[in-house]
Figure 1 (tube, helix red, strand yellow):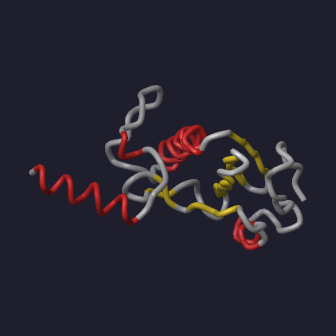
Figure 2 (cartoon, one colour):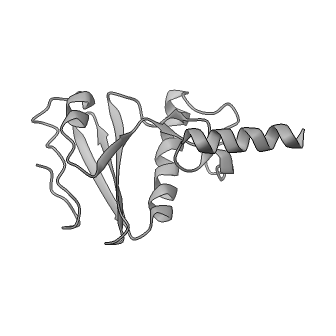
Length: 139
């Protein structure tokens, strides 16, 4: 198992045990961790599966919100007291891979510029539907 920086987080599978490909790692995530494939309003790729995977964890009661980034067998874990702080950090991870793998939004701001609101935060179908409906009603 991978060493966890916060004792309230469930263990993560050791990447070496499951090889360099992330699908095996995803399959062994403990309860509470969830791999996220999409980010931002429109659900752009998050990471570069199976080589780069982001998994999130939320325990609002314990005020622990974390994410783990799996990169070709290496794992980096960051924990925060709020989901908003965690998600802001994931925004930067998403933007890095969008820029370097050309897999993100066409209107992505250049490096060093702030992300647009629709590029930030977790993807959900309800978020996409609400924002798309609002845009249509404003046109």
